[in-house]
Amino acid sequence: MQIINPATEKVIADLKEDSTTTLEHKLRLLQFGQVKWAAVPLTERIAVMKRFSALLEEHTETLAAILTSEVGKPLQQSRNEINGARARIKWLKDHAVKYLSDEEMYADEKISEVISYEPLGVVCNISAWNYPFLVGVNVFVPALLAGNAVMYKPSEHATLTGIEIEKYLKQAGVPDDVFHVAVGAGKVGKALLELPFDGYYFTGSYKTGKHIYEAVAHKMVPCQLELGGKDPLYVANDVTDIKSVVAGTADGAFYNNGQSCCSVERIYVHEDIYEEYVKEFEKEVKSWKVGKPTDEGVYITVLTREEQIGVLEAQVKDAIHKGAVLLTGGKRLDQPGYYFQPTVIRDAQNDMLVMQEESFGPIIGIAKVKDDAEAIKLMNDTAYGLTAAVYTADKERADAILANVNSGTGYWNCCDRVSAALPWSGRKHSGFGSTLSHSGLRAFTKTKSLHLRK
Image (tube, rainbow, N blue to C red; front, side, top):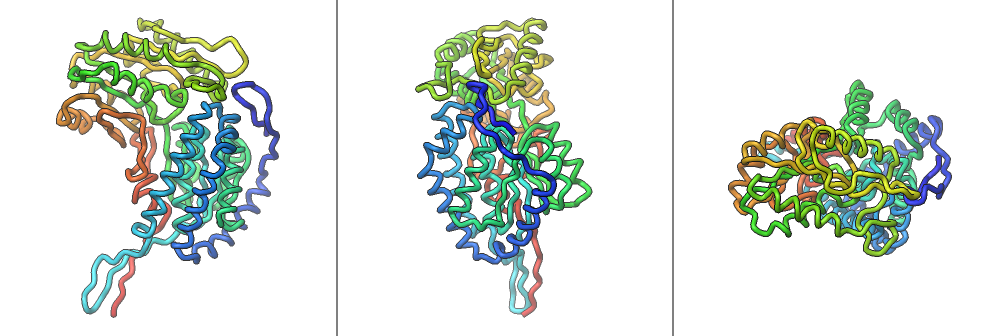
C-alpha cells in the first residue's frame, strides 16, 4: 500500500497490507492478551495512559510532521490535534475510576445490589483520517482503560500515524498483545467485519457505517457509528458584533479545510443582517493564507483525498445552475497537490447539493431566512443530525431554537467544538452510540447485575 503526500502527490512510504491470515493471527494474540490486561488493576491501566500522553507531548513535533505529511493539514493544526488528544486522555483517565468501578445501587442489612462494569473483550476500531489522534483516543483510550484489547485500523490515509500510536502505546506499557494495528484499505476493513470481535466502533461516512452495521448485526455485539454531518448554523438578527461572529463562524466552517464531521456546512442568516454578514464573511475568507501545509501561517491547504475535489466542483456547479452566487473560490488550484480554493456561495437554497450533501471541504453555502421559525425548519431539513449552532444575544431564544433542532450537540455562540466531558453522539444518518464523557467510558463495558445476600 502506497502512502501519498497530498501536497506533493509523491509516494512517501510503501507498507505491506495485512492479509486475512495475519489479521486472524493478530486477533488470536489479542484474545489471549486481553484476559491478562483485564486482570491488571484499573489504577495501573490509568498510569499507562498517563505515560502515553506524556510520550505524545515529548514527540509532538515528530508526530505532527508525520501527520501533516500524509493527511495534509497545516502543521500547526497537527500540533493542535495532538494537544487536544492529550486533553481528552486526561479527562478520561481522571474519571475512569468513578465510571468504571463497581457501583452499589442499594444496600440494607440483608442484601447489596451492585452493577459491575466488565470489559467487552477484543474490540475493533475502524478509524478516520481527518483527526486520527482525536477520533482515535475517543475509542482506544477508554477501551483500554476498561480492560479491553483493541484491533485498531487507521484509515489508509493516516496509517503512518496509526503505526506511531501503536509504538507509543506500547512504550507507555500497553502489552504487545493488547493493541495491534491492522494495515490496509477497504479490503482489510471488510476482512475485519468477518472476524469474531466483541464490539465494533467506526468513524466515517454514512454509506460505510451503514454497510458495517448491516454486516455485523447478526453477531449481536455492540456496534457504534460516528458518522458524518451537514451541520447548520443560524445567525439571528440581534447579534451586534457581526465581524466577530463572522470570524468565529468562518473558522467553524473552514478549519482543517472543512474536513470535519462537525464543521459548519450550512449557514442561515436573518434577513435584517444578511448583507452585512455576507460582505464580512467574503472579506474574512479572502484574507486567509493559502499554501503548503508546512508554510508558516497557512490556513487553507490541501485536501487529503483527491476524489473530494470532484464532489466540491459538482456542488459549485449545481448551486450556480440553481441561482446561487459564487463570491469567491470554486476551483481547483492549477498546481501539484490536492488544492481547492476556499469557496463561499451566497443566496443558497436548501435544494442545492451544497446544502444537502456532506461537503468535507473548504466550501460553504449561506442562505437568507426571514425569522427563527424558517431557520429551524431549514436546519432540520437534512438526513443528518450531528451538531447545530445558534448565534444570538438572547439565551432563551437560543434555547428555544436548539430545543427544536434534532441534533446530538447544540452550540450557543460557538461551533465546531468537542468536549471530553460531554457525550459525542449523532442522530439519524450521523450515527448512534456515544464516545467521550461517562457514557463514552462505559460504552466499552458490559454490565453485570449482582445480587449479594449477606
